[in-house]
Length: 341
Image (tube, rainbow, N blue to C red; front, side, top):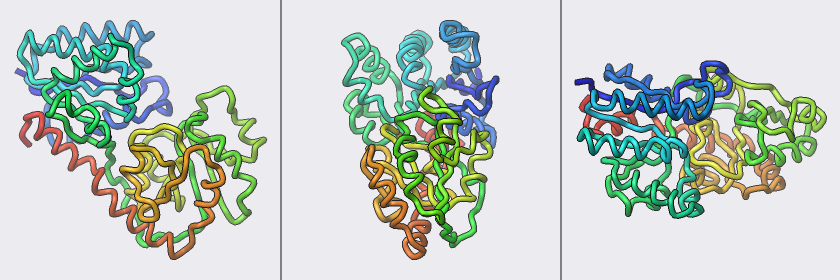
């Protein structure tokens, strides 16, 4: 009998730069398992690694049906779609084969999705959550929201390894950076609106794949945005380490991985007052919080940081990283699903 089967999204085989946060987290879990010498197999659910979405669903489903009985523990590493499409199948097979099943739900918006769903969609979500042996959520507010469906519900936040040991104390050189996708809900319009208002002694650079037609390299250039292109996932930390402060003026987020990478380097963060982010950032402690869609607050926050405040923010940011250390959270995950290490 094999030990552990993981169902989740592997890296994009065709375009490494087009790798989302869910895939990064799943690949990091696999790396931790390898380092701990835990034997496992994977069924890939990333639709980009298949000819189309329908083939991705049917291929994943057939692999799950074929392989399920051969494992003692099965864990669905779920996006919203895989929860709805593959979750019921995993639950059904667990009842047939009497296996231990768990689900780790990525992202922080399942409460909003559930509240806006029709009767059938709510029924599916409730069925999956209730029948998993253990559920893991990325944010504490989701635990509170769904705990009544299954009291075996735990926190498994967005995590990272500390790949670079930063030089502490960091110096403040007014170098600010945005790293993420280039689309409106990430607050790109707010970044554009302040680029010409900052004095020349500030640097504000932007990295990430362009995901909406309203933006292009030429448009960003015309708006005087210092657009630096895309980053390979394994270069993000080293690039981030060349800046002083991360900005993330998003409209919607769970636990952004780039904030955790910033914390691992002792880099404070300016971000918006969203539920998940406010679980990570304490205003004027390890970063600054601003209102959504408020470019004036974004500019004021950037200009408010000085050498003394930066020292305190940076020190506290580095201390905050311990909550999101991948090794510690992977150990808890394995312990809770029943695998000893």
